Length: 82
Length: 140
Image 1 (spheres, chains in turn brown, purple):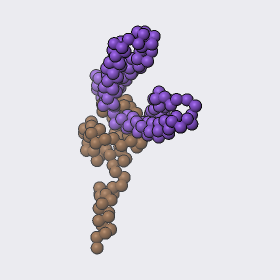
Image 2 (cartoon, each protein chain N blue to C red):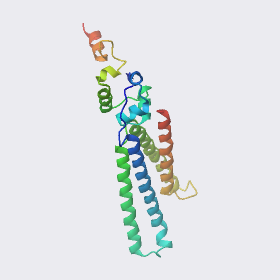
Image 3 (cartoon, chains in turn red, purple):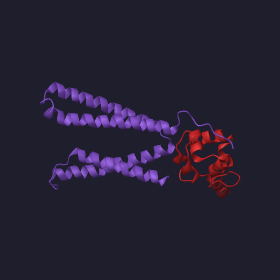
Image 4 (cartoon, rainbow over the protein chains, first blue to last red):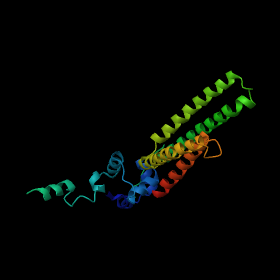
């Protein structure tokens, strides 16, 4: 899962520690999410989205989806339809 | 600059308080284990009443340590919980894989000493510490 957490944080000039405090998690967790080593749970993703006033999909992006937001299931359906 | 207001009782301070509580109850439990192990012989000359009291104290403090551990786990964030869960999985696995053959080796006199439960406890402690350290460094 890719995300724009680092960009959004930099835009607001927040430190990892400040963001961690605001989300009630450890600084290590923020760093792990930003570097893509760890994907947050759904409740944490919602907290991030609420904090930035954005939708979850505007922050977190599944690289297996195409640009229209279609996933593997759509591709399989397309390939198997005759 | 869009400033964030720091919380009054933030994650770090809560976790620190939970670790201190867990450390105190675990230490107290270790103390009651020592009392139970050495007290009957050195302190009250095997008087049954005092031994039973020591057992009761050991169980009570042990339950408080379990509650403190549960609270510590419940208040961890997603990543820390994942690190601890991985450590627990490795520790339980190592305890099972190492414990059974170790016990059997004692039964068949392959090892020249008694396979004491404390050896397994030490192995579990070391495994948990090592896997936790590895997990913490991995997500640093």
